Image 1 (cartoon, rainbow, N blue to C red):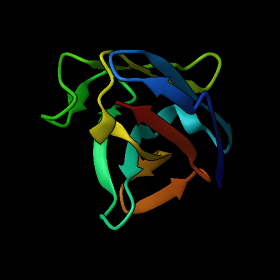
Image 2 (cartoon, rainbow, N blue to C red; image 1 turned 30 degrees about the vertical axis):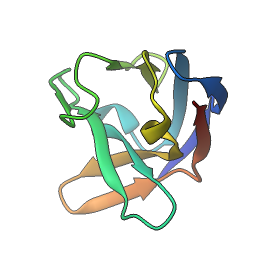
Image 3 (cartoon, rainbow, N blue to C red; image 1 turned 45 degrees about the vertical axis):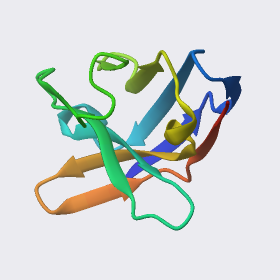
Length: 115
């Protein structure tokens, strides 16, 4: 079992920045692929960015060059630095831990970008 707790969401104006953080605890979270997903009202949950246990990253095209995912395996945290935010980035952001077919999710944190 892995427990995930997100923090850092909030309200920001377009063009601004936010940093989300996810604290993982439980059974060896450092071996999991960690990721951030988001879900806007009326839309399906979508991938934002993932980072493997070795540090390999992958981003959705819509956030490339604006968002950066990072992890600290010593502290069991994964962060998402979000720059140049747009109103369309407004969503609930969820932290995810994945290993093979097992998924764990945090409860989510709201990010609202005003125009």
